[in-house]
Length: 498
Image 1 (tube, rainbow, N blue to C red):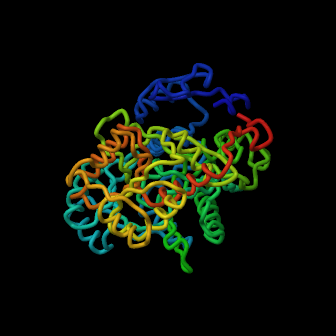
Image 2 (cartoon, rainbow, N blue to C red):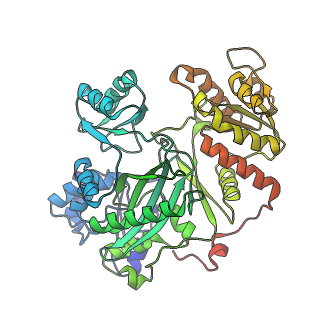
Image 3 (cartoon, rainbow, N blue to C red):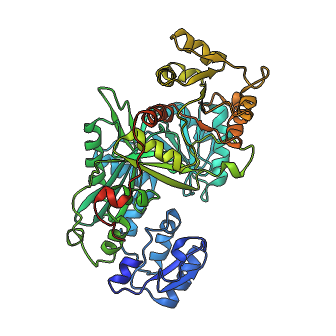
């Protein structure tokens, strides 16, 4: 809005949320507090007769309105409604990716539970079940067998406005990557390539991520860059686009890159990417969509890869809901995010955890309890903490595997096995950090009590091995490196333009 006002445009904001900063009286020339429905927006358009409407900056809701507005001759500027429809329609998008030679996970769509069950069996479990055209990953679930599919597919069908559900082959142990890019119909520039710290299966809005990628091989990053630019050109993007990738077997000799989805709009990561690279992407996109300037005229034609690491960490409201299990999954739960920046990834991660009110301890007791499939993978993580001088405690199964690998650990009973248990130790302020990866659903009642108690007693609880590995690195950095605070302006050597 401010960028367009500087270019002489009279600006109009339609917002259904009066709590946001965009409702400040001087942000736009005209401000409407109205529901974001086709009828309400059309009424506003009848009144003000805009020369152009931007749908890219309001998330999925205004994007879903684009076709209805265009059908009533409302001028949508930026990426065309036709291109938006291709990206949003599963069948059309699949055909486009096939045409471009870009891989995607095997998938199917249905409105019928029995047909969905047939699709899931054909794809092979686990599969990701989700309703179409809903926000924040609502009613999305990873299912592992027929029984779970019947339960969660029925919920997904009820949640989908058109009763259509999407069934995707779930890529286990894959690394997710988000890409934000900007284009003006001629030039395409990568804004940022973000490697998720948690593995695939955590909603992108909840997962921590880092710019630039901290562990992906360069050839994978280069190929992701090529595929992103190819897709943006094919869709004739004008403005911003977010693409989500999954990299299977990332550190093997034969990695595979899959596109999960593409959203021809500003994603929630745009503010983070802009701060991480020192470039105001939203400002540039507004000027491009309004045809006020091209990217060449703005002077932004090359990707900025910063020399420092920036980590985005999500902020959760769990402390407001006593007893709620803070486990993460495909359905988004975060209510905000913070950023940590440093010359090394480990310290940037430590700063982000501190900002998210989940600080990592520099000493104390670390409790470890992981499911069976994670027991081998947790061994080097536990060894890292032990070498750093942390005292390890664990439940029977995890303690047994750690002892077999000559790692000193004290066994503690599970919640149902006796006292004092872990919750007692948390009440006595004896636990500094918890690493707990969830077991099967039958075990989640006690595990959920454990994780909920961690929130209540303000003990940082990590529920994925990828995040636990990053935490071990961060704890080492906190003990061995000097902690420094640096402003964004200092990172880039100049004030950041608005």
